[in-house]
Image 1 (cartoon, rainbow, N blue to C red):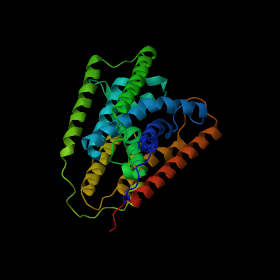
Image 2: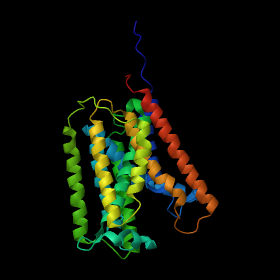
Image 3: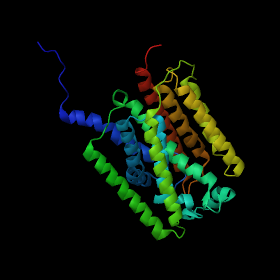
Length: 338
């Protein structure tokens, strides 16, 4: 007598496979645009919904493509980070061209962010480049991937999309990027030069090549001690907050030092067999807290009712806390006994 459990019906299996993909597509724009509370949509439910729906194509689609590429190619988190950096450069350097702008969207504090570390031969601000590209790496792409994969614990290494889904996601990203680029070329007077566009494309190509080379990384082979996940959350939040305090050359040096030191420490600890998915979630949670907690002090663009602003900040903080808690619980459930 065959006691094998029957396979779930095809529609139910498809829903289980696609649900985390849709979750990532919707979470990425929230993390990219909503948490910091800087935009005119802060506290505006209709504006937030419109931003999330469009951002699903502009941020969610590339986040999903990064995740699917990494899992299909057997890339670890270094590969994910490198792919995220490549698409972060594409986003800031080619699509919206904020990386090379001297006056983006008429933001009144743009000069304060860019002028102190402006490198005239390159037409780029060092501090802004680190902030923009790093922001896409951490908040637009990697942190949402970490949380959604942890919540989808049983299938975190499996592909979520098949070929039609990959094609549709790619088309959505291309269409959204083309719309943003066209709007930029039509409404802004400060455009990237051909040399800047070529440099951004070349840098992205190099990062993509390095991402695939990272698949050769040796497996974990040590049993060194690692910090508890609970320690990594505030440490990550504090380090990233400190890295964003000042857009001067001193601030840039501090930020670069923190990024390099933190990256080296994480690379060292993650080689240990004691490093778990809970540690990954802790890093993602800390990164999101580093941007959502200071949002209470952010003055949004345009005119925003204070009650709506602080309600927005509270809602985003609660969302980050709830998702981080859920992801940590799901990751802990699958952690091997010690």
